[in-house]
Image 1 (cartoon, rainbow, N blue to C red):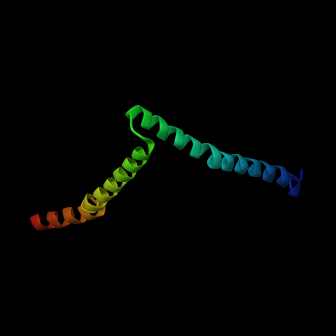
Image 2: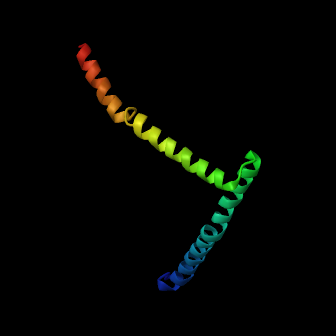
Image 3: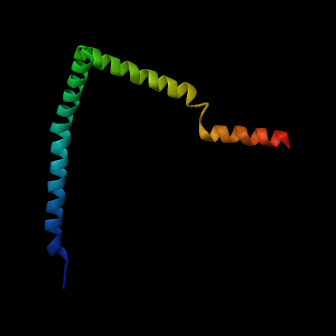
Length: 91
């Protein structure tokens, strides 16, 4: 049985439908869900929404700063190198 080009249009059509569905979800549902979650968090914390946004940005900035300062010293490759050098110094 020949399954040449005849089966490609339906498979391509299914792929296009899936892409359309994912794009619709990403374009419409995701921003709505983020807004809804922010609004619920603001109501739960009894804070205005702009303050929740700015606090979120502040927390992200603090985490990034911490990762850059401590994360470099805790790099597994750097720690392995230091451990090997320490082990060689003992022998």
